[in-house]
Image 1 (cartoon, rainbow over the protein chains, first blue to last red):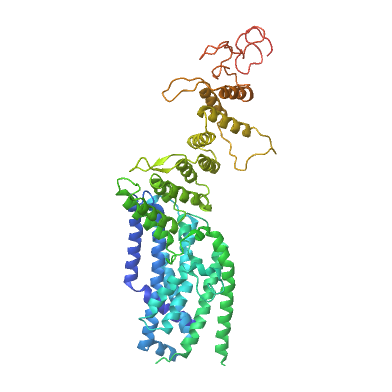
Image 2: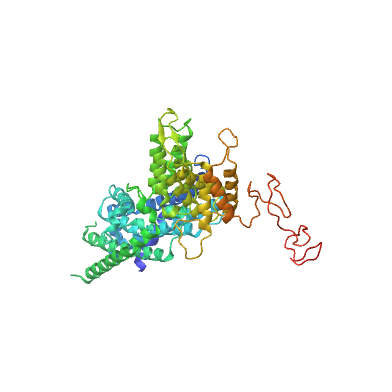
Amino acid sequence: MGEIIAIASGTWKNILRMKVVYFLIVCVWILVGIASMYEILTIGYHKPLMMDVSLVLNAIAASLTVLSVTFEIPRELRQGVAATLLTKSLGRTQYLAGKAVGICVAGAVICTLIAAGSFVIYSQTFAVTIAGTMLKAQLMLIISIIPMSAMAVFFATIFPEVVAPVLTILAIWFSYSTGILSHIPVLYGGILPNLDFFNFRSHAVYLHPIPGFYMILATLWGIAYALFLLMFTSFFFKAKDIK
Amino acid sequence: MKKDTVVRALIMIVSLAAASWLALFLTPMQNEITREKRMLTKAPVAGLHKFLADVAWMRFVNYAGGLATIDTTNVDKVSEMLKSIIAYDPNFIESYQSGILSISNADPKLAVKILTEACSNPHLRSNVQIPFYAGFILSRTIVDQNNPDKVLSHPDYAAAARFFRMAMQRSGHPEPYIISNYIRAKAKMRGGDEYYAMLAVLYEEWKMSRVKKGDFLPTDYCRIPDIEARLMRAAREAKYPIDEDGRLVKPSKASLDLIAKVQKEAFADNHLCVNCITPTQPGDRFCSVCGHQVAVWGVCSQCKQVLPANANFCPSCGKRQ
């Protein structure tokens, strides 16, 4: 466990140390604030628009954060950093788990900052309190980073850094889009990821309730799926020749 | 096989089974929570339906705002824009309230079709305006603005009345304009003398409002709050009908018969003038509007002095009332 935490802390510190991350967070806040100026162009629909924009931008931020690991792992493998790490007592599975946990923490911090800032902007602009559904929708988005990071680790381990990010983005897009496959639950949501379980953007905008029990089950699904994918990836990683 | 490999394989199988098992529960739960997903477009948009609906709405506002009018020449493009908004977000109320209404003069059939679908949307079931707009469009004759000889849609009063009724049911306290449109649509549905039809419709509604517990009532029945005032007004208008030029005309025999029936059943205790259906005051011997002799009420049975409201004794002679 100690090795996993060590790798994870290295990963999240690397991301959270970058100034560009905070610059992007500020950009997101500005964009969220700008939505309030769309009152005329939307015929008074700027309030739901702001809520929606904050959720969409936060989802993009989560995907981008997760994507960073698809550059990091292939680079570490190429530069021999991973080989150096793996010569120590560190196991390959721990390395992968550490990367996934690290990216989850970094993503959670970034998305929480964006969500908190968006809530402040929203409540200050419209002088309203934040509804529970809005908080839950943002929380679901943050939880979706768990399976997403496992997916990113999977592609980053198998493919080079040119291909891995593209495949990861395609996989995230696929797992949000193909709701039609949800009629085959063991396949979609079992073997294939179903990130649509975490998609409550429209719900938050209309302030429809999100049951707490569903959120718990979705979190458990995210953890179970991430675990499955990490173990699956570890078989490939174990067989990989690392120099 | 190494122990480590076995452990990893075991964790993988167990976690896959757990994820599949949880997905079995989550999928129907999510379908129940987000019922509108069934109505969403199947286009692979990475769950960004709401955001794309917002963008499509802004494009629509931008485009429609630049048009002098929406008519048969440009309605197709406007309709496509609105359809795409609804495909991305069927709960987008503004697209129905501002958008669909804007195409109702150019493509009323499509407008009604979209509004009808919106009426069955569970998330919009408390919306009063959507069925009202559908009824409003259906109750009018709509002609092509560029070719007034071409009728785009004929009134369908039966369907309009259904939608107005739906709007009334959705509202705890229906607005007077919704009730008026409902009664007018039902009266038009009956056809014939307009005044008689209005009175007949209101009389039917009044009778339904009087049914006792356990008696048969239509499932979509909705009580009209001011039914008696409306019935009285309709009876008065049926008694003194006017033609298109505003001249008084003779009421039909059917109207007079119905007015008499209404007066007898609905207004027996309301002290109305039998001639002009105007409420009379205590002590009045003649109607203050038409001069017709009326039954005197609200006076002492002994000295014939007008009694104050709720008087137990006559203030003039002291007789117990």
